[in-house]
Image 1: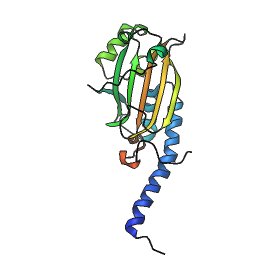
Image 2: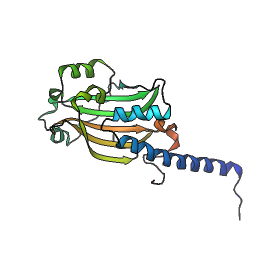
Image 3: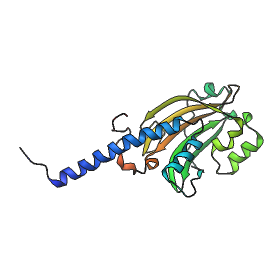
Image 4: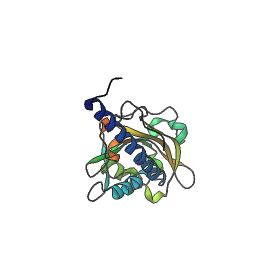
Length: 200
């Protein structure tokens, strides 16, 4: 029976260690995200708990010239007629120089205040922070481990949700692509477009 060499065993052990560690931490990350209607607040809490950033402030950095196509169900979900009635934001949510998430956000400017719309145009303030005074809630449409269509490599979690006002009117459709860096792991810690780790 052939004996595996150290050169063969070492990468295997490293892969198993990464996958086992990621599985436990990924579950914690999922629970942290599920605990908040605002992804921004959830990421802020995650940064504080994990020592990411000093101070642990989440900022939104615009991604230019890389717009995602409007989802086929977006107008129905947002209850608007015509793409012209929507705003769009594609941002990287960073904390301490670490990109935790990329987000595509189609929103309804007419349901926000003029000050909120100006902040979304002119500042790096995350959407959830800008619209927090509206006391929005999150209707979760989909959440799975791995990379959804339109998400970059290194995505470990993909979320799709509608944010809505207390009266039920929707203000935003978001597609959120959470990155491996949020778990202190490099993009290459996972192979392919989906996670090859056990459920926890």
